[in-house]
Image 1 (cartoon, rainbow, N blue to C red):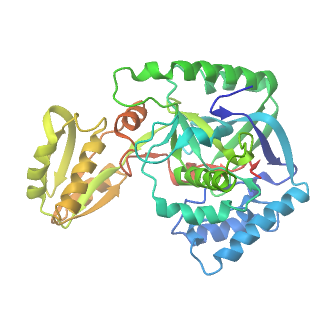
Image 2 (image 1 turned 135 degrees about the vertical axis):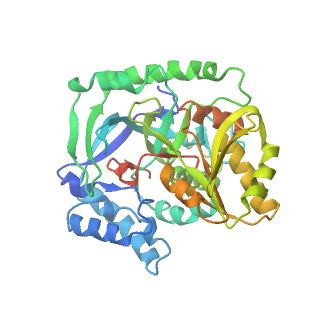
Image 3 (image 1 turned 90 degrees about the vertical axis):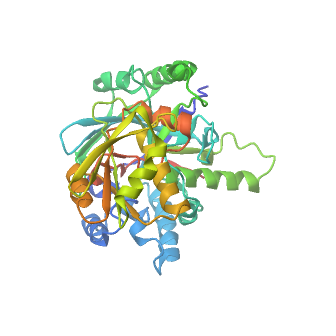
Amino acid sequence: MNKNIFQPADILLPKDADMEKWAVIACDQFTSDQAYWDRVRAKAGDAPSTINLILPEAELGSAGEAEHIARINRTMRDYMEQGVFAVYPDSYVYVERTLENGTIRKGLIGKIDLDAYDYNPGSVSGVRATEKTVPERIPPRQRVRRDAPIELPHILMLCDDHEKKLIEPVAAKKDGMKKLYDFELMEGGGRIRGWLVAHEDARAFDQALTEYCAHVAEKYTGLPGVPMVFAVGDGNHSLATAKSCYEELKAAHPGEDLSEHPARYALVELENIHDEAQVFEPIHRVVVNTEPEKLLAALQDYCAPGGYPVQWYSGDKTGTVTLDPARSELPVGVLQAFLDKYLKEDKQPGEIDYIHDDDALIALARQDKAIGFLLPAMEKSSLFRGVIRDGALPRKTFSMGHSREKRYYLEGRRIR
């Protein structure tokens, strides 16, 4: 029996649905754009659609939230009773997503063992969060999942497979697999295709993953901290919600064997950070309403000769600071730690903002009483090294693609 922490699942897909109406983007996108979600509902109409099975975060806290959640759970049960879903037992789904720039991002849908995942600070589990989990964000999501009979994931899990031994061999065999879907995603989401990975193909992947896990620690020899196998790239709070609901179940059934309970697992898409289509874009920092010269002087305590070079801009001035690598595996880790202390603990004047575009950062830094830091792009393996050494990375460390490139809800799985 496969004992890997990532395993095949009994995957649900709609039998005869209009797939463009079925698939909807992750609920944590377009949180300030209710018009986006209104358009999605209009496009789906009365057709089976995941818009009827999720609660967009744009609508969290609304007056009708409780009834909305109850309606979601009823619709899930109705879809199952009406035979909307086909079941693909003990399988993976290999996915190719065509992005805005024409590149193709590869992934594999399966279930992750929640007993191998811990989002708390200081975690040494095989699966870890890349960024700090905000506990206050979990209860609203629990209300959606707690009584739901099925789950639909938008979670992206990452592996640090620079030798490309896991997903890429599956991709090489796709022409011999059953194609499950091939369609354009709504609202400019690009094209998506999926193939069924079952039987011998699934077992071959399981064996490759077993070997990968056996040697994963060798990647990080000499690095302080306990090595990990997977990192959560997107959807950390959704996975944390699945974990917290599973822990509630265990607490309510002390002494029971829940090793095969479906709630022990969560459906995710596994991707390789070394896929050519994976782009980790830096998120820069600008501090406004501050005293730039005073801030730069205080930052010297976080610098060291030969450290990470980071360009700064303030008004018509610019320069470079060399951040101390002994403080963090990543330059953003050093800078964010300083800014948090300077602005919060030391109570110095200033407000921080997080900027994606280089030109936007420089333009904002030109205003009076502002300073901006242009952070370098993160080397891909530094993601794992940073989490292993430093724990969860600072908020807004990197961005994985644009909003419309986030995962759409497609596959599902029973969780009760």
